[in-house]
Each structure stands twice: as structure tokens, then as C-alpha cells.
Image (cartoon, rainbow, N blue to C red; front, side, top):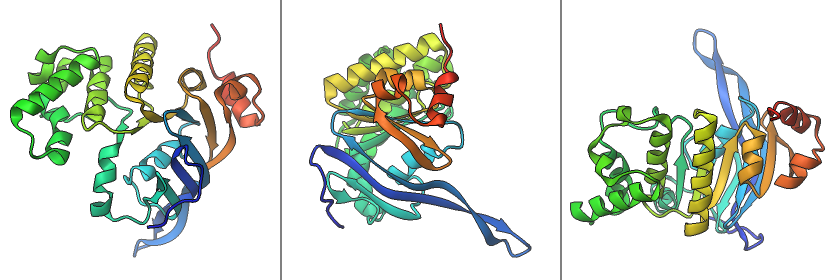
Length: 269
């Protein structure tokens, strides 16, 4: 594993990342072409900051986040976490980094197992990373997490279908916080929620960042949400980053036509 020669203030560094998916054809289902979901993306995420990654559906932003978390294979490129290359690691080597790097998924219902209680859902990462903890310790931790995201500890014996979309997303956030990560990939965490609930979840994420010193990669298609929570913004189109600047600069002085198109799509109140 190589070490990156970069600014020590960066927690995450991505260089020339490419993620290609094969297109199969013919009787033998051979590869006849490739979908270039991510095609040469480079950026850094400073420690303690939020970098927004914004683009339309199919732009490659979610695939970028999944590649960083090793949920999809990387075709080419390098990803460094605190100067250590993640792309060179196998699953066993990456296990300790998975504890430090968590994901909040877009669909707060689809990402929660409907057959598991809320306790089991939030305690599952504790079982993996803190296997020597007693059940009492895990229950205390789950209760603490539920309270921190604005839910009652008594809810831990209920099931996902008994909650609203906003409550389910709070449960997903509690699960992501369970193992005390440093870096969280927020994969469109509010896009499936009502506007009023979106604001509550964004405010919760900001409070948690301030309290725990978290670093976020915040993926979304809505520039208004991204501008509100992010320090810097990456605008992605067709697998490439077309503009990169501070949130204020992106919102007030967009340079790329695609960025202006995204801003034009934001409802004006």
C-alpha cells in the first residue's frame, strides 16, 4: 500500500478514479462495450468539512461514493484515506477502515431489513466491530444513539414499517454512527423525504458533524440542499467533474453551463 504525498489536511483523496461496467452481448454474453459510470474523477475531502457531490441521475455520483466505500469495484485510479491507499486493499485489509467510513443510503426503507428490529439493525455493526461487547453494552449504545438522532429508546423493539420516512432515515443515521466513524458518505440522504423533513435531517447532520468532528461526502441532485450543507461542491456530469469550487462560488458565480442548468432547476420561492 502506497502513501499519498498530499496535503495533511485532506482525510480522503481520489485520483483519476474510473469505474466501468461491461455491456454483454451475443450468445456467449461477451463484453461488447462499457458503461463509463465514473471516468477520471479526482478530488479531495478535507478533514472535518463537507464536500457536496451533485449531478443528475446517471451522472456517476452515487457510483463514486460506492467505489470509495468498496461497494463496487474500481477499474482504475487510486483512493487514499489518511495517506494510505484503499484501492490496493483486499476485503480483510479494508475491514478496519470500514469501521471508520460509513454510508447513509438514499432509501430509508429499502436500506433497513424489514425483518429486523431497530435494535438489531443498529447493533449489527456493533456485533461486527465490537464483538466482545455484552448485550447490555450494546443496548445502552443503541439507546444512546436513538436519543441522539431524536428518537425514543423504547423504539428499539419496533420494526422499520412502523416508522415514517424521516424517522427511518434517522434510524439509518444512528446505524452509521454506531461504530464512531470519522467519515460518512451521505448518498442522497434526503431525496426521498418531504421538504420539511429534509430540513430536519440536514440540520441533524450538521449538528452531528459539529459534535463529533465528522467529515462528509454529501451526494445529491439538488443544488439548493448541497449549497446549504457543503463547504465545497463538485458538479458531476456523464462520469466527469465539470466544475469544482466553494459552495458560495458555485451558487453565486457558476462557470459551467451544466452547473447553471442545475441551478435553473432549483425552485425559486
